[in-house]
Amino acid sequence: MEMIRSSAPFVSPAQKRMVELLGTLAPAEGYTQSCLDGVRFMRSNRPIPRTPVLYEPSIVIVCQGRKRGYLGDEVFVYDAQQFLVLSVPLPFESETDASEEEPLLAISIRVDLTTIAKLLMALNDTRGATRTEPKGIYSTALDQPLSDAILRLLEALVSPLDARILGPSIVREIFYRVLKSEQGDALRAALTHQHHFGRIAKALRLIHADYRGDLDVETLAREAGMSLAVFHAQFKLVTSTSPMQYVKATRLHHARLMMVQDGLSAGAAAARVGYESASQFSREFKRLFGSSPVEEVRRVRTTFDVPAPRLPTSTARDVTAV
Image (tube, rainbow, N blue to C red; front, side, top):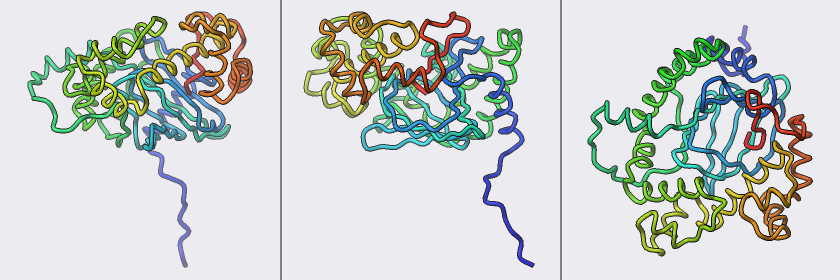
């Protein structure tokens, strides 16, 4: 008698426990802030088509569902088997596989370069520059030690006391695990300004610190310590876009967040992020997101059931980058 084998993927007890915990920690769609700074939960109960997003430097572990990131010609899959590492802030496009029965459930941990620097000192990491230029975004296999650490972090985050006492040390362990992995070179380079990559990372940090200001290519190239020609070429290698297009995308993403969560009008958000012309802002917004500011705000609020006024700080959810 022939055995009928199930085609369903094997789900380990540890992964089932992660999904159970995230179901509790992320009850609503979008991003939910945990009680630990820099750690957020992600949930989507439905598929989301390819959409522009802006991720800060972070480690993203998907425990259920699947996401695909698109940057230039490259595709990055992150799901229960692979996690995503961004060593620099990047606007890219993301697509989500999810359903009511199996919602996307994930945890996002902001990369803290101060902690990374302390770990490198503790490791007495005196290696020279790597032979190849690292990338700003990777997806890579989730190994058992890192998976175990993620599970322990989720267990701790259920209890505010455990989160406060145990959480920071578990997050530090997660940084250590990633730093020791094949993705560690990108984090080291972003911090130590190795190669052209590290210098571009420095310019990217300036953009995100002062995206409202009057930034120009000359200022950014000077911050990176590069000639204009080299800066342009290396910037595009890291981000798949030009410096000023990157600045523009960063402003537009922040404006969208202000309109959705703070209830700002398009004109007010445009002025807040550095636009002098509201009509130019609307044109460029529609070019990036495929809809007008009013339409996009309506879409996000309808999709994620978000009210117009900003939620209290303790429960605020960023729903624009899932």
